[in-house]
Length: 251
Image (cartoon, rainbow, N blue to C red):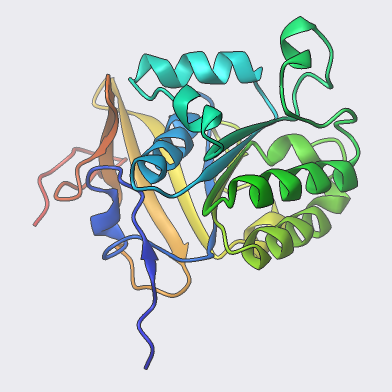
């Protein structure tokens, strides 16, 4: 039996839940409501890769690339040197090329509604930097307006990302009360699903995550708490959260 290659996320505690990391070339849907830490998770995954010599691409659909760089710098993740050396690229699928700052971006999707153009620009960026890690933040933007095309968009992305050898995280925005992950077409196309939540437990907000599925590896099945620190996300893989009731220390 061949040993499955794993890609470490570098997020403290998270790789334990996957017994070493995400299986190479997997497409992972990272799902959650607003403020759950999805973007931070994706950025942390990319930055860790850069430190390990694994190039990456971030597709920004919901935020200006300038703001993305600022947010990352806030955690001490300075990506400029990696951009300068051609190991990292941000695909601007947010501005449509409008504005002074946008004119300085190298990879710009001019028509956000044109999935074909988006995929072409993403493909070019991945090939240029030889990306091993890709984060799309967020895929919800692509099909919110046309839910019927969600599955086909996902399958196109999957073909490109896996075909080019990347291990990818696709951020999916869900409403706070929604217990799903972003729609059936999206869920079926993903190799893995990780759900981030922010819930009230005993009168205080608690962050937790759970790995719903992950092809190619066994994975932890419990809801684990995590924090967002000034260095990024830390997962407490030895603790368990019970949402209705009290938190208890596991294992």
